[in-house]
Image (cartoon, rainbow, N blue to C red):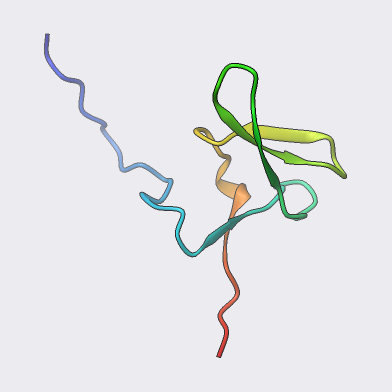
Length: 68
């Protein structure tokens, strides 16, 4: 079986280091929760929306503020 290669670069970063997860709708910080199927997901309590940790929307990743 031949391996399929991506035709374009992955838009998500290879690491979440230096990034924080925020709600793409209201920009509130998201909380991480364990899901019933064993996966993890991020949830926005004010909006009542969320996404799986393995499939974040591009707007959900924001750089952490720099200090010092």
